[in-house]
Amino acid sequence: MSKKPVVVYGASGYTGRLVCEYLREYNIPFIAAGRSAEKLEAAMKSNVAGIETASYEVVEVAHSVKALTELFTGASVVLNTVGPFAKFGPEVVQACLAAKCHYTDTTGEQDWLITLEQEWGAKFAEKGLLLSPGLAQMYTTGEIAAQLCLETPGLDTLDIAVFWGGSPTIASTQTILVNAATSKAFYLEQNEYKEWQPDAGLYQLAIPGQHEMALALPWGGTSHPVWFKRDPRVANVKVLGGVFNKPLMLGVPQIVAAALKATEGMNEQDRYEALAKTAASVMSTMPPRENPRINKSVDSVHASGPLGRVHCVIFGNCNYKQTGLLNAYAAASLLQQPPRRAGFASGCQAFGHHELLGVLRSFGLVQEPVITRAS
Image (tube, rainbow, N blue to C red):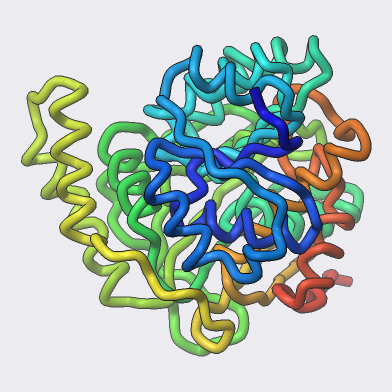
């Protein structure tokens, strides 16, 4: 049973550590939970700035519904960073519902979001609990930009680009590869899911703030088409994203194609293990702590309608820090008041896009949005 109001599950990972760091800044007591107490202790002491002033407890827990329910009981919020979420998330969500805890995670797995909405959204709503996957820079900061555009009436189409500097973490690399190799990616067209062409390769995009064209991918479809399918203002959503590192982007389609070919005909478990091994060969070391001079982010949204156009771009830095902060703020908010929307909801739907923008701005992680409206 938890003696702290917040549980960070997967706290020893790169993102989990940052969540803990920002929980400390909000002065929120938390449990750092995961499958290895040794890794958790080492991560807290060596990788969480200011941990000596935090009120926290390290708990080793088995990845089962029973064990997680026992741990979560007594807590109010669970911040989940253990992916791939389609594989490891169901037990955590079940345990949250049983323990009556709000749930957030950092996923970008579109199939996981769709599953959560269909299978768990109503159950969480019945209990007044929040089910908010995809609370992360790659999804939420772009959603903030989209919501700012939609403050202009009459817009129904969102063209979204999400870019960041640096490399994905070990866990992110594994999640990206598994998701790309096993799941379809969808965009939204007239409020219906349409599949991205799986063999289309890389797309070229014009990114605000630079002359050079950037390389992009559908990146699993992302969270945005799922969120905005529930928004009566929006009918069409397409999202492309990537890293500024062109050599890395050029290698992604080849890595995915090779992994698909190598795992063809395997059963689900063997395929997952083979894909995890491939991911480890691509990224096997924890990236260094983010540097705002290197790890920049750009979230750009062109919103249009029959007679209107608005463009919003948010320049920022340190996308993983943005993710850690967004989850810590979610916990801080949920400990003080109910979410704006219970059940399945995005970060903006649950907490408000102006509020989330204000948090990111107050910690120096994003600039003031640049908004251009066509006359």
